[in-house]
Structures are given as C-alpha cells and as structure tokens.
Image (cartoon, rainbow, N blue to C red):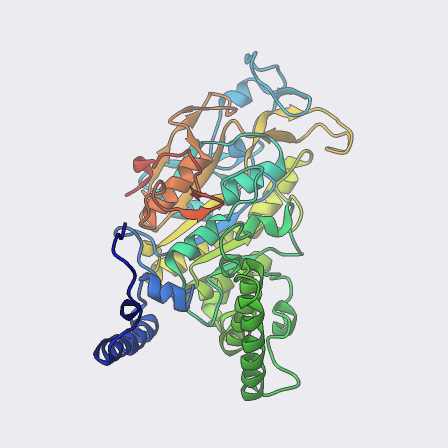
Length: 482
C-alpha cells in the first residue's frame, strides 16, 4: 500500500519513455502477427488475435487430430466386439443373474446370431459383421469394459459427447479445438457429419457450452452431394469475393462497435467469428468436400454408400488440418434395435465395415494413422437378454435387445492407442463391466492425455470456478496407450 502523497508528474511519461514503449509495442504487434501466421504460436497473444490459431499442448502428444465414428443408438457389444459363448448355452432360458436390472421388461438369454472369429497376431475376437474392419485387429485397442451412468439416449449422448449428462457443457471437439486450435484457418476446427439431419439432442452434442462459440462444431449433412446444398451459400451469387470482403469489413466494424457497448458478449463474438469463417470457407471448402477428386482406386477401396463418402470427406478434412471430425450413423437411432436386431445390425455394419477398413488403410498409407486417433462406439450397449414387447419400443416383437449402460464396447486405433490389445471384460454373459472397468470420464481423460493434456489441469474459467471436460472425475487408463 502506498503512503506517500500523490504527485501529478507520476501520471505522465517522459518523451523517452513514450518512444520506448511505443517502439516495443509495435515490435510486439509485428512479432505476434508473424508467429500467428507462420509458426502457429501457442501464446496468449496469438490466441487473442485469432482464437483458432495453432496452440501447443501441455506436453508432447501422441495424437494431433481425432476422427470419432459415432454409432448412435447403442450397438450391441455381444454382437460386435465382445463374444459371449455362454449366451448360446442359456439361449431361451433365464440367466442366473438376480441383479440384472434393465430399463424395460426383458426375458430370457438371447444368443448372438453372428459368428465370432480370431483375427491378426493378437487373436482379437470380432463378429463376422465387421470382418473387413477385423483385418486391422492388430491396430485396434478394444475396450470391453466401458460403462456409463444411465440407460437413456439423451443423457448418455451428452455424457459421451460433453462429459455431463444434464448440464450445458462444451463438447469434446470444442475442448480440443479450444486447446489446440486448427491447422487450417479456412476451414472449421471441428466438423460434424450426420446424414439426414440432426440426431437426438441435436446440436447440443457438438455445442461449445460456456466456451467461446467459435469452438462449436460445424454441422454438415453428407446426404447432400451438391456443394451448394452440402454447405449453403458457400459460393457467392451476387458479389465478387473482393466486394464481399469490403462488405464484411464494414459489418465487422459495426459489429465490433456494437460488441464494445455490450461488454464483448459471447454470443455476439461467436456470430462475428462465424461470418469470418463462412467467408474463408468459400476458398477451400469446395475442394475439401469434393470426393470426386479422389482417385478411382481410393473411391473403390471405400466402396459405395453414404458412410464411404462421409469417411472420405473426413479424411480429406483431417489432411487439410481440421482438428476433430465426428461422423454419425444417422439422424435417428440406427443402432437402437429393440427388435429385428439380426437383420438391422447386419445391415448397419455392412454400411460401415468397408469404409472403416478403408479409412484405417488410407490413413496408414499416408503416414497419418500414427498421429490420428480413431474412435469407434456409441453412447452405451445392449442387454444380453431379449426385450419383451412394450408399447412404442419393439412393435410387439421378441427379437431385439434393450439399452444397457452397465457394460459395452468401444475401440481406439492409431494416435498412440495400444494396437492389438483387448482391455477389460464384462461378466460371462456380457451385461456388466467387471474387469478393469472404464467409465466415460476415464475415456475422456485418456483421449486428452493422448493429445498432450493433463485432464485435471486443462481448464476454462467460468462462473467463478475452473471447469474441465472430466469435471471432478476420471483417470487416465495408461494400459490403453502404446
């Protein structure tokens, strides 16, 4: 605390001091601009100039980017990556599990209609419906002991995507883009593709939450093949790019003045950034999303169908510096097979199997798999017992499975994940994770560790406290890392 009387001369600078500070200031401004554009500076200065500037993680990463293959609806673990021969022994009979709690009324054991087989040197057992993906068994890190909190789609989707089942929180992709920025300033750092429109919980699945809006996912509907429909207004119709730039500069000036009067409101800042990004995307999006530019042999490797096109676009985006790409199964609940599971799971897997195998091959051939983390899975799994007829769920049929959050499967590949490894186990019937259980918070902590972040120290200050993706939970599962 100062005790001397105030002096007017203390409030002024000498001419020498003024020149020194101005000179240093101009130098700092030039250096900041240089670092932002050429070196991808991770400093606070670079971030303040451009919130999507490349930033360094907290420690050396194993992965630089992520592609999340989201099988929304809940694929059945006992029909994909977690074989349970005991179910065939008890097929049509009650399971000896007195604590088997399910969301809806369920009945006897339901054996898997598919055959499992060992693949690769690791001997990982995988269902016949993913026989092409299984050719990469030695690159897969299969987690058979995943578990979540509740057997409902809405909270489980938010938990898997945002780390919290109820509160508005930033999505995983938003956290990662906030932490690392993007390597291509003409494309979004976080892109979401979901055929046919929004899924359940809609854009909350890729929201920025309390982070600045620039970190939210950019949604694309890959069912639309024409560029102008895939990305609306991407090609200017009524003005040249130079004219658009002048219009945008004027709009920016007005918006900034408006923003200053409103204490830099987050939603307004997000809108300003979206205008800038939309302008920049006109220069590069047409190339990134045009899969017809891929060589014929690459297109044939991925095969036909919406998911093949989706994954080709995803690889092109990752190749161009996009940080996080999420590819969804579809707008509804495609893996949510309360009935006709044998037919529907096979059909769904056929749409994904070849494109997934092609993606892993493609990334490996391009030298990208080693620093690209591929994630496969849904928000939960399904019961090993058959679901009994209930109103609105299974149309009176008895050939499907109910939701199950107690134990399910996911897998990782590339990006520092431990290939050819099976982690944990459910009980002998595939209902509950019993050996080395991995909660969703643990998965998120491990993903951040692969990207070079300590999940306990990677935070954002909001409403008077430091928030993180894993909240107050989670532990890094080192066994999943190579």
